[in-house]
Length: 240
Image (cartoon, rainbow, N blue to C red):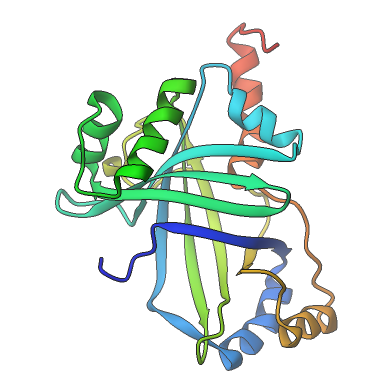
């Protein structure tokens, strides 16, 4: 875990690709970037929100500032595996991420009992403030399969491809597996380009040549709009 990054500040651009577009752009990415040493892997997330989904409803409105909280693992965590508790914020188009890591049980103790962890104390304080402010609870599991690339020769860029996005609202424990119901109909792949400022020119040209254009997409936001909001209202709740 020595090479794990715990804070981020970057621009993130998202692209919804068809399988054909993915197969056209992938050779360009492979030629100019290095593939992640882990190959294809599964990311598991538990998204936390208030009982009436305040955080994601505010996010969908596209405010200047928005934030979310999740607990993430890479694959289904074993007892000794690290998971991440992280706040993800976006302000004026810039994404900021602050996270800590420990075993699943230790992270849960930190969240529920305010147990101090051997991690950055400032980030722990920020997360504790967030938890105290919103009193969020686990609302949905979202998992997906990812292939990731990093820039060569020190170029500060990361490109990821996520597919098979799935969700569930029961068994909200990362140790319960990575199964779920598909979020997107059809064979779509979500491409994300993550850079400190501007996308490099070689990639801009490749995207333009293949008629691939950025758009707004949120895995949690899409899941909420397509499934969770309907289930929530069907239970007789009133969202104000």
